Length: 397
Image (tube, rainbow, N blue to C red; front, side, top):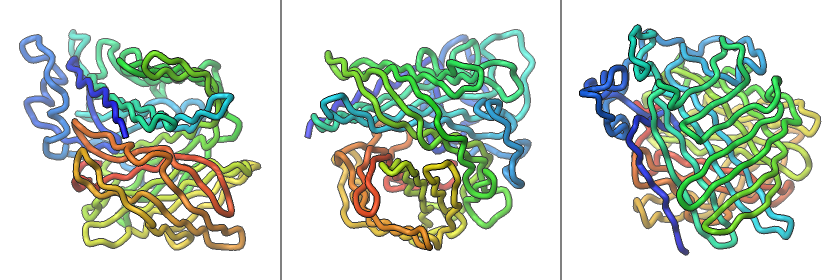
C-alpha cells in the first residue's frame, strides 16, 4: 500500500483538534491574544500543553433552543466547537473516494479582548482535510492552524445576520442560500483538492435529548450536537494530476461544548452511516481507561422520512471482528465490526474499512478516520472515527 501524506504544518496561527483536544501553555496562549515580538509562533505547541481552565465558559446542561440556520454558526460562549463533513463519493464508472473536512474552534478565553491589533483573538482554529483514493489505496491528509483574528479563520456567529460560513484561510464551507440548505466545500492542498456542492434533503437530526448529547453521568459533561445525515453531493476531487467528477452523499456533524468528556475517558469509536434504503445511523461508544464502556452515550437512527429514534447505549452492540496495526504509530485499531441494533425495528450488519490505512498521523493528535462499507440487513457507506488508541483523550476534549 502506498501512502501519501501531505503534512504541511503551517505557521501563521492555526490550531486545535477534533476532538478538541488541546490545552494551553501560558506563554503561547498569551501569544495568540497579542503577538510576541511581531512573530508567528508554531501553534502545534498547543496540542501538548496542559488542559485549559473551562471556568467562565457555558456548559451543556439543558436542551438547546435550536434555530436554523442560525445554529449552523459559531457559539463563542462555549470552549470547543467543530463542523465536520465526511462522505463516500464515486465517479460515474464507480471509482470510489472518501473525504473528511473538519474545522475546529477552541476558545482560549471566555472574554472578548479589547485591542487595536487586528491579530488579537479569543479563538484558535484547526482544520483537517483528507481524501481516501480507494481504488489506488492511497490516503492523503493535511492540517492547518490559525488564530481567529485578521480574517485568517472564523465562523459566522449565531448572533450575526450573515450566511453560514466557516473558514481557515482558503479552506472553507459556505452557504449558497440564506437557509443554508445548499452548501459548498472548497479545499486544496499540495497533492489533492476538492470542490463540492451539497444539498440538504432532511431536517437537522438532534442527537441525544433534543440535541443535548451526554458524554458521562456528570452534569455538564455533554455537548450540543446535531447532524445533517444525508447531504446530496456532487463536484470534483483532484488527486495528483487527475481530476474526477464525483457524486454521492455527505454526513455533517456540528457540536459545541465545554469539557464534555468524563475523567475516565480513554477515547471513542464513532460511526456515521448512510444506508441505501434511505435511512442513516449514528452510533458510538466512549471507551473508559478501565476497559469498560461509558453508558451515557448512545446513538440515533434516522428513518427515510426524517423521523428519528434515539438509541441508548443498551440499544445496540458493537463487536470488533478484525484489527490493523499502524505502521506510523504502532497503534492497534479495530478494522472490522459486527453491529446489532435492538428493538422492533432492529437489524444487524457488518462494517469494514474501504482501505486499512486511513490514520491521521505526524503532528498533534493522531487518530483513525476513514471510509467504511456496510453489508448485511442494510447496506451502504459511511465513516468511522477511532480515537484514544495512540494516547488517552483525557483532558483533551
